[in-house]
Every structure is written in structure tokens, then in C-alpha cells.
Image (tube, rainbow, N blue to C red; front, side):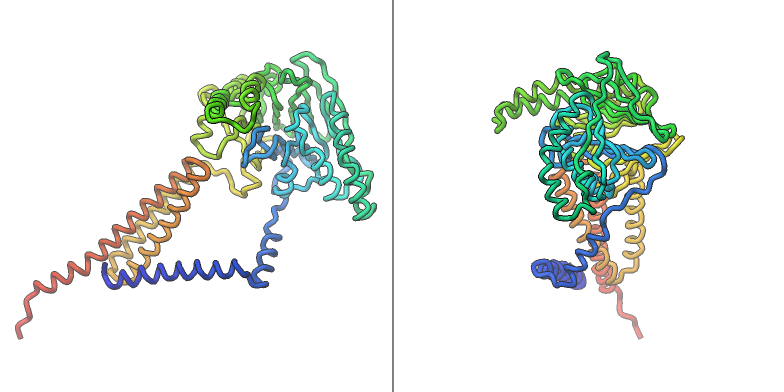
Length: 474
């Protein structure tokens, strides 16, 4: 290694080590100005209400199930139609995600429950509390559902009654009126006919239909259809394949459908039975749940037959890591059945349908990252790679000390990025986008090393040339 290269590498490593030590010292005992800056930055970074038009919009507040999942909370959906905000189901943790998205619970006009399994109602008390306290609402939350909803709402009202009195006493009746706490149940009875459906809301151009689905032995169990300004979304609730769900989904822009992959559930069942499980009833439960949920292929068949535009899976069973391989395994043959767009739902997934159009826009309000098509990411990465190569070639031709310095820095940065990608693989499993970035960064690192070798050989070659030159005769 040349002396200049040793100096360059030493300086780079010294700078990195110095920065690491300095950051460590600051973080172990942060000065007051830094603490204030962090607090101010956090306060300013709070998400605000999304910039959307007067169309129909849906946010998946929770996409999980009763099975433990570190990346998903209980099932819940937010539907925004014009100025109205509706919640469909209130799974555990979903109110927290609503707050994190920048949408105030105080804006919620009504809740619609599909059925009364605990994972669909567990956060109802927290939602009623946050809606009341955050905006000082003076009227209780309206909660609609099939017969049985009164018992559920009354139970939550009783459980939160003492809490409401404490908050009113503390903050004052003028700020949090006791009259606004809790909820009021509105039971809706529709025919027991498996193909039954009924319009239950028609106001300001918003039409909401409740319809029967099949979640036996859970009865009643319903789904909901929302229509507004030429756009429509159907939310399945929990169900096996249902002709009524298919009929209600006819020509819908969006179908949000629960799904269970029985093959993967069975793999988990066999693995836990062989290795032992801390849940004594685990094998029984994992077997039983397979007969009253819909498969990804059944959901795809529903979407195909109903001529749906966009199918989104939710209520994921079993828990699914955010990786393309896991997603493909879960979806199974669904893409062969339905040729429309299919997406795996994640918490914060936001689907926007502008009024009177066929456009569907997706993003994630909990990640602040637009769901760009993979081709965009690939093109951007390739352009970065080409730019790095062209710049590197121009620099290396100058044969100056700056060239090894810059190339060495690039190599160090790429090495750190590769370590980050490896960490991502370990944490989240294989992901196509991460793998592509890994390959691009690996190519840049290899290219950097080759350029460094080339710049090292140039001075040596020049020395050999100088030695073979004959002295000039004077």
C-alpha cells in the first residue's frame, strides 16, 4: 500500500472513530441545548392531517389478528368520505395508530362493528375516551352493529365510568363534559337470509350498506360497503367465502378482505407440536381457526367474480413479516386467479380514491414513505450506480491524491451500508428491494476497491518507466 493511501485510510478511520466517540460522549450526557432541540424537533415532526381531496379514503389502522404480531395491531379501518370519518372495528392498539397518523380521534363520527370477537372490539373503550377527551366532544360516540352491540357498548361504558368522572373532576366540566363520554349503541337487525343486505346510512352523498357474511358459529357477522362520489370500498369483516360478499363487492374500487393461509398455519402447528409450545391449547386453536376464515385464493376469486379493481388483504393469519418472499408465500395462487392489483395490508396503509375517477393512490401514514412501484426504485438505483461510475472514472484519470481519498471514503460508506442491509435481512427477512440495494452497494464497493488498486499501480508503473529511461546527453 502506498504511503499516501495509508495516510488517506488512516485519516478516514480516525474521522469515523472520532465521530463515534464524540457522539457517544454527547449521548451519554447530552447538553441542555441539545435536549431542547430534540424535544422541539419531535414536537414539530408530529404528523398532521393528510392532504386529501373530497373523495373516498381508507386507512388500515390495524391489520393483525389475535395471534401475537410485533408489526400489527388488532383489526380496524378508518373510512373518510368527504368530511365524515368512520371506524370499522376497533382492535387492540388501533386508536394509538390513529393518533400516530395525525388524525384526531375527536373527528370520528361513528363506529361500525362487524361482529363481537374480542380482537374486533378490544380498543373500543380507548377510542371512546380519546374521542371525548382530545376534542372535548359533548356527545357520546355513535356505535352501530348487529344485535348484541348494546351489550358490548354498555359493558365498555360501565368499565370506563369511573375514569370519566376522574377526568371531568380534574379538567373541569367546561373542558371535558361528562355528557360526551362513552358511546351510544345502535343495533341494526337485518334478515337472517345469507344474501341479505340493507342500507343503514344515507347522508351528504354517503351511502353505507350492512350485509351478512358467514363466520359461523359467530352470528351475527356482517360486512360493510361505503359509497361516495362515484367510488366504493367493501370491508369483509371475518368470513369464509361468501356469495353475499361477492354480490356486494360488484364493481367496487376496493375490497379489503381478511385472509388466512391454512398451509402456513399448519406448518406453524406442526412446528409447535414438535418443539413444544407454551400455549397448552395452541394446537387446537390453530386447527379450529382454519374453518371460519377465508383463504387468499378465495378472496381473489371473490375479487375476480365481482370485478373489483384493487384487493387488499388484512386480518393477517398467521403473522407475516414485511418481506416479498413471505408475501408471495402467503398470497399463494391468488395472483393466478385475480389479474387486478393485490396488496398485503400493513398498519398505516392509506388508500386514496379521488372522487369521480378510477385513480387509486397508496401511501403509509405511519411510515411517511410513498409506496413507489419497484421499477421506480430500480431506475433510481441504476442511475445512482451509473453516476458513481462516471464520476469515479473521471476522478481516477486525474491521478491526484484526491482520487484515492474520495474513493476510499466511498468504499467505507458502502461497507457501512452493506452492514445495515445485513441487519435488515436478519430483522425482517429477505426483501427484494433491500436485496437490490445490497447488490448495488456491493457493486460500488467492489468497483471502489478495483479503482484503488488501479491508482496504486499507476505510480509503480511510472517509476519503472523512469528507471528504464536513459540519461540525456548534454
